[in-house]
Image (cartoon, rainbow, N blue to C red; front, side):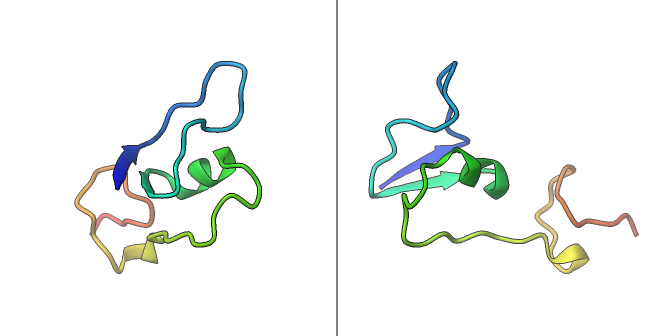
Length: 67
């Protein structure tokens, strides 16, 4: 299985090429899902921000609040 961090989109295209059946895409779910062809996959697992209930220990995480 391949892990791909934020796959690139070729210039002039709006979809990711070269995705196989056994590949994990890691990155911003909204941005990545927009790059995939319609009806491409059967399952999508995302990690929502949980608005302060989860700390992923990154400065740019969504849903964090400074305490």
